Length: 135
Image (cartoon, rainbow, N blue to C red; front, side):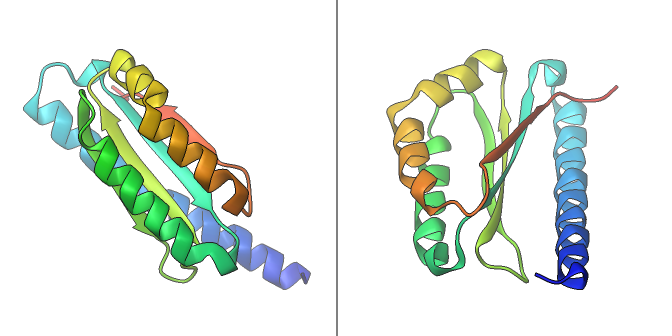
C-alpha cells in the first residue's frame, strides 16, 4: 500500500465516521425532542469491515442481524449502512431504551450467533462504540 493510498483510506474512513456521527446526532435530537427518557438511551455505532471477497456474505449477515435486533425488547432503532465506495465496509447504528436493554440484546442468542458468524469474515477488528446523549 502506498502512502498516498493509506492517506486516502484514512481520510475516507474519517469522512464515513463524520457522516455516521452526524446521523447519530440527528437520532439523538429526535429522541430528545420526543421523549423525556433520552438520557437513559444508549446509542451504538459499530464499524464492521469484512474482507472484500466476503461482502455479499457480510451483507446477508448484517441484514439478518438488523431484522432480529429490531424485535428485541428496548430496541428503538437498528439500521445498517453500506459505504458507497467500499461495499465491504458497514456501519450499524442502534438506539436502545437503556443499558439493560442493550445488555439483554448482547446476551440474546441471535446476537451471539451473528458475532460468531461475522468474526471469520472480518478484515479489521469489530469496532463497537457506545454513546449517550450530550447535553
